[in-house]
Length: 495
Ligand SMILES: *[C@@H]1O[C@H](CO)[C@@H](O)[C@H](O)[C@H]1NC(C)=O
Image (cartoon, rainbow, N blue to C red; front, side, top):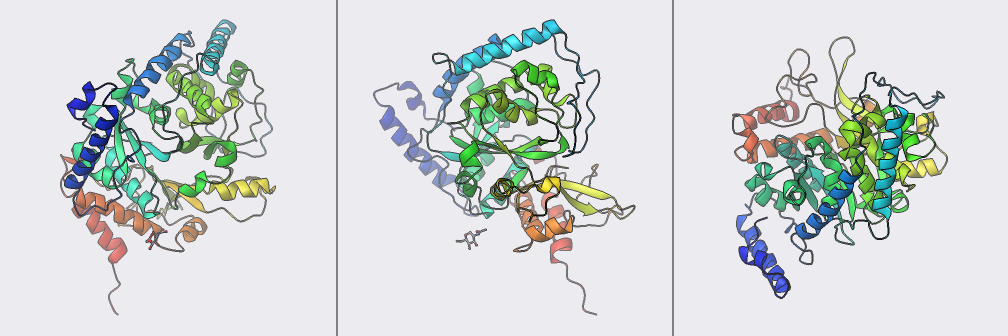
C-alpha cells in the first residue's frame, strides 16, 4: 500500500488522526479504482486495524533474526549421501525408525546446544520476542508472486464461492513481484491484500529463499488465527467453521497428511531430547494447508521458522532424509513436538484426483484432496481409525490442492508430465474423474470441476492483459474458452 507521505513523518501526536484519514483515503481509492465487473467484498483492512503493521514487524524481526543467527547449528551442512526411500504410509509398520544420515558426535553436540539455546531464547521471560498480530483476528495466509499470482487469484475466487468472508494476506517476495493492478484492484475486491516480505525483512537483511517463505508469511501475517493455504489450494466449504470447532479449538495446530510414511531421522529426536514416535503413528505431512493459532502456538511457530531458516543445511535433511517433498512440510509438527505443544494431524489419507489414461490403466493425477478435520477428529475420538481399516464413513473433502501441473491458464495446456486437460491422444478430457467415490461425493450438490474451470476462464479472460508474467502470451482466454465449450457446453447432436 502506498502511504501518504505526511503519515510517515508524524510520530505520536497526530497518529490517530492520520490513521483515520488514511483509512478514508484508502477507502476512496478503493472505490474509485474498483472496476464494476469485480464483486465487492469491502476494503481489505477493517477500520479498527492499523493499515500497516510494519513497525511492529520490523522490531520483531530485528530481535528474532538475532536469535536465528546467534543459535546457528554451527556445523558444516548435513549431506544426504544416502536418501530415505519415498514409501507409502504403512499403519502396520513396526520397524525401528531408520537413520540414513551420518552426523558425528561432536556435530550432534553442537546442533543440540544451539537448539537448546534458541529454545531458551524464544521461551525466556525477558527474551521471548512478541509476535506481531492483531488480537482476535482470523484470516487466510498465502504466498504467491510471479507465475503463482494467476493461480492464487483462481484459488481466491474458489474460496469466495464458499461465501467465506475471511480476509486473506498474500505474501510476495519483493517489490518486483508487486503487480499493481492485481494487488491494488483485483485482490482488494476479493477481500485480500498483498504484503511485500522484503519490506519487513529489510530491518535485518538476510537471504531467505522462496521455498522457505511459508513460516515467515505466518509469522508476519496480521491475523491471530491462521489458515495457511498454498496458492494452488482452495476449500470446498467455508473455512470459518474450522476455527470454531475441534480439533482447532483444542489443539491450536492442525495439519494434513501426505501420501508417505514419516522419514524423520532418529537423530532429530535425539537433538530435541524426546523419544521418537513409532513410524505407524501417523503419516508424513503435506503442508499445503495448515491451521494455527499464534496466540497458543507462538513458540511452535518460532521454532518451526528456525527449522526452515536452518532447513536446507540441517533440519530438512534431519526431518525428511531426502524423501519426496523435503522442505517445510515436517517442520510444524516437529516444532510442536519439541515444544510439547498440542497438535492434530488429520488421519484420513490424502487422495490423488485425476483422470484415467487411455492405455494400460494409467492415472493422470493433477490434484490432491484433503478431508474435513472436524469429521475426521470426531471419528478418531470415537475410536474409529479408517487408515487402519475400520469401517466408518469417509469425511467430506474439504480442500483441493491443484498442484500438478499448476493450473495457470497461460501454461496449463502446454505439454507437462501430467496433462490434466488432454488424453494421451491429445483429445480434450475432464481433469478430475477418479476415484469415482470421492469425486462423486463432492460433486453431488454441483459440478465442482466445472465451477473450478469457470474461475480459470474468468481469470484468463478478465485478466488476460493484467498479469506481468502473461505479457509474452497471446490467446490465453481463447484457449480456455475453447476447452470450456468442448467440455462443459458441448451437447450431442440430435440423432
Ligand atoms: C452463498 O450465499 C448465497 C446468497 O446468500 C446463496 O445463494 C448461496 O447458496 C451460498 N453459497 C454457498 C456455497 O453456501
